Length: 207
Image 1 (cartoon, rainbow, N blue to C red):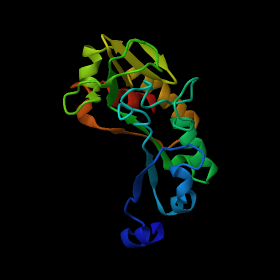
Image 2: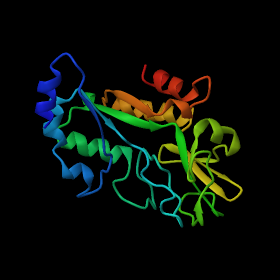
Image 3: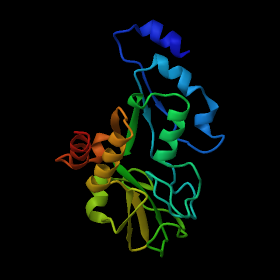
Image 4: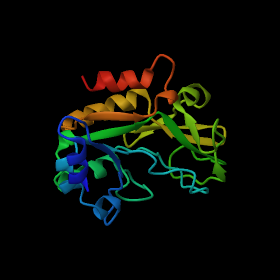
């Protein structure tokens, strides 16, 4: 399939794919030949976000884009580091892997515990849909109160959110460079502040 796409588009056009970041044992990365297909792709956008969210309405609260594992993580392998390590082990060149950064948070309501791992009663209210909100809103409406596993979280009232900040993006970009990755990508611009705090953190972090 990948070979056919490359043949169709030719050598001078980009062939890329957004792919799963499920690094769990026997998970979605294990379900396809990403190593073999990589020969036909310029790069993979690894969707290293949305690992956890309020579809698990009662929690436990967990950061949706953890860089690394942490004690109490609800699902082993659901981290950026696990996903990248598994793809590399399958033979995907590091330079063909881009790290995904979400310009939004995922959150729960009915939460009393500030640290991750608390119980909840449902999805936190959001502008477009419950359980999700843009960084540009959360930055002031529910500022970060802590960090875990290379990302940030916030507890305000009974709402609990996790999202990346310029500081956590900076640390993720340092990690990406140390891993030899091809770069990073985001989903998506409208979640950033008008002066582009997050995209600037990506650009500066990859210098």
